[in-house]
Length: 280
Image 1: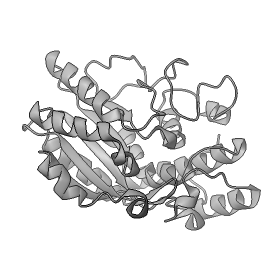
Image 2 (image 1 turned 90 degrees about the vertical axis):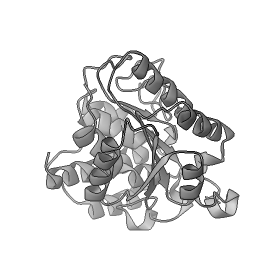
Image 3 (image 1 turned 30 degrees about the vertical axis):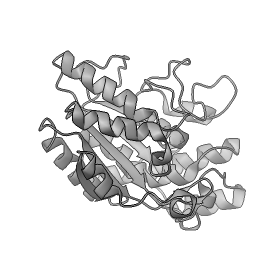
Image 4 (image 1 turned 180 degrees about the vertical axis):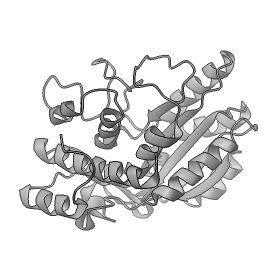
């Protein structure tokens, strides 16, 4: 798929995000908007995956969303890449919906392999999946996404030690470095220090990318794939703006978990304009 079409898909996903969160007046638009380009690149360009979903994913690349509160972007990308009907997005956070606020497995939503409401657990799960692929001689890759505030969870650093020690080199993880979390800037809540130096010190192969430049996202993900299976897990530090694409949501923690009102939705959709696709 060419870059211009991927850009249209990303814009449509951002429209889905603000509409989903608005219609139920609940959810997390900020991080979802910021991470849209990454998930579009993964599902429409980079990953080898099959919308005819099975939990084991033999012969496929797997994706685990560790910061599960940004479910709106994941649900939109899953639907628009064929995992379930796009029309189902209108059920987001409704009673009896498969599209819960944080992804769950008990509703058997295609594409979702773990519940990820609690932060800090996704890297450990992904390492287990990556080791399973190695044991099964499956050359598929395992991708993960984490929030920078999530790195304040201790389990992340246990996993960070384990993966290089055990040469889990079929793992490509990404951290959304937007500098914001629910209570304010990460540097104010609990500074993360020099993330590049930390992950390199733990033994990871570290890359950087602009997460709001789709071309750079694709280029960096392809570079990461070329450096897999060389003895080290790979960590991508992805700089983004929380709320990217909607000017009044950008760069502030206030839109971490706040739904737009009617006027704000109208303004957001005007900024996102039209796409080659249709709203659900």
